[in-house]
Length: 268
Image 1 (cartoon, rainbow, N blue to C red):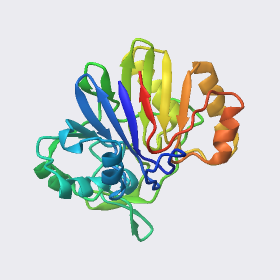
Image 2: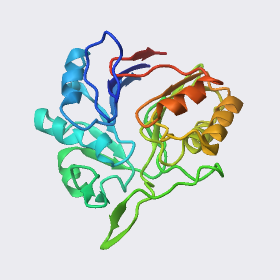
Image 3: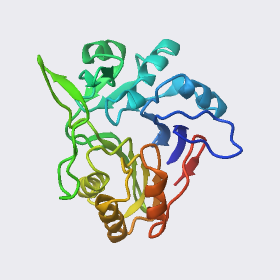
Image 4: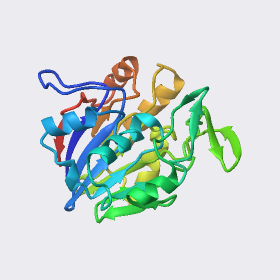
């Protein structure tokens, strides 16, 4: 498995990439070339060129959820390359219209539009991209302290309702050393995601977790999350995107926390 951070809020020092408050990771595993989330703007194209990644050779795109800081890059990619042979995997709610107040925060395309552009595979259940790479589908509520609040509104049929981001999911890579989990924002709860991944993959060894954990305050939920990570003996943590500096600092007291930024490369 080879992983490269294409888009993140931060960039690594002395590596002249661009940053934006968004997410995109490039993954090579089992002869598949996978893009996990697509960022927000043309940053994905510029950083891909700097990292010598040929996005025209992608086999899959996986969306963690439909928020525009993870999905808007689909429009950028579609305007710059042929996407007709690329498989897109996402939760079926990923392309439902989403608003936060009057601001549109959803994906740039509808489900019908994306079906015309790519091989679209919506999945609530876990979906295997390859022997060692799995999209988790809908994340169930398992951990009692990870009760999610709604973020804006979404349109279900003809009705507008509170959006609890049920489309939020994650990608799991299997290895001989354990599981490596990639998340977008973890709106469904990072511990719920880890717990579900171990259940689906029938492997309780967690080699690493990389992505946004949606943790900002040094509150009870953060402390319980840290305790959960300790109990799970997670070897490497890579919190980024939607994790505050204060939260990272608290994690570092107990856990092996690594720096993340555009340009980071990880091989397993």
